[in-house]
Image 1 (cartoon, rainbow, N blue to C red):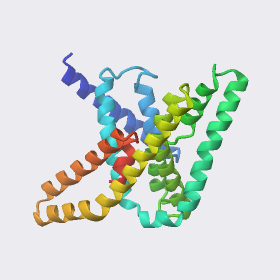
Image 2 (image 1 turned 135 degrees about the vertical axis):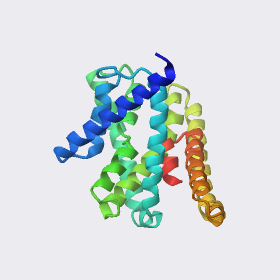
Image 3 (image 1 turned 60 degrees about the vertical axis):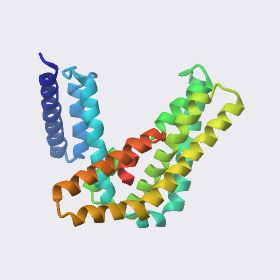
Length: 251
């Protein structure tokens, strides 16, 4: 079977499984995104293994997640996040630290891992949440603008920023202290660059660009500009060591 046609078949299978899973979850009064995940597990490599062009489907899924986070980000206000920044920073930092510490200690004591560094790596993985899943659940329950919804969003932002730090530090755990220090410094520099770039773009660049596109009175051109903006910022955050989801959400 030709690869192009095989990809179309895989997409149809994925969409059908997602629709069936979402409907099943809805009948059980559960979040539909849970049904989407279960549907994907059934037809994916961990289930029946019906998907053949796995890499291509995963690439398209990355686009889908980016656009989902972009749409959700449009509905959130960073002014509201300012009100819960203290509890988000403190709670998010404490949650990540405790999860890594408890997981590392437990895994070493039980014998799940061979070294403390592996325990820290496992704890780092478990300390992170799925931004797309959590935000989608909040929107489905109409809790995105509630106080606890804003706190959860703030914690997700902290986790995404921590991901950049983890990606720099974890590979250097078995290296000398100087290497770890340099990795931390590099990660903090990237976080600073990202924050500064987001502020500059949000105040001076993006609004002017959108106003210019709006003046053309072309819906297609405006939509194309917004898509390019979302994907460009998502790719930039990926290059800086953060997640594509965070970049799309910030955009």
